[in-house]
View (cartoon, rainbow, N blue to C red):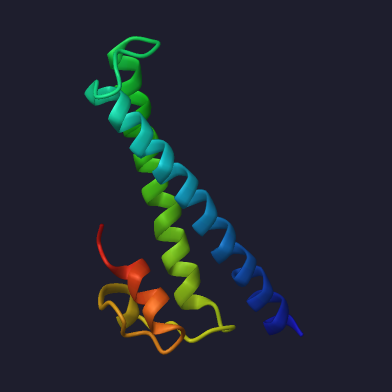
Amino acid sequence: MMLATSSTALWYTTRATGIVALVLLTGTLVLGILTAGRCGPGPGPPSLKLICHKRISLLAMVFLAFHVLTSVLDTYVDVGWAAILVPFASSYRPVWTGLGTCPA
C-alpha cells in the first residue's frame, strides 16, 4: 500500500514540477526578450528586469531538475537513467520523452 501511495505522490510531483518548470521557462523567455530591448523599453528599469530574468531562470532549472529526478524515480512508468541524457532512449513514449530530452 505504501508503494502505491509513494508512486502516486511521485506521479503528481512529476507532473506539477514539469508544469511549473514550463511556466517559469516561458517567463524567462519573455523577460529575456524584454531585457534585450527587442520589444521596446517596457516598464521598469533594465537592471530590475535582468535580476528577475536571472532569478526566474535559476528557479526554472531547479524545478526542471526535480522534474527529471521524479520522472526517473517514479514507478508508474519506466524512464531509465539513460533516458535523461540520451534522447529517444526511453521505453515509455520514446518520441515525446525524447523531444523533452533534446536541448533547445
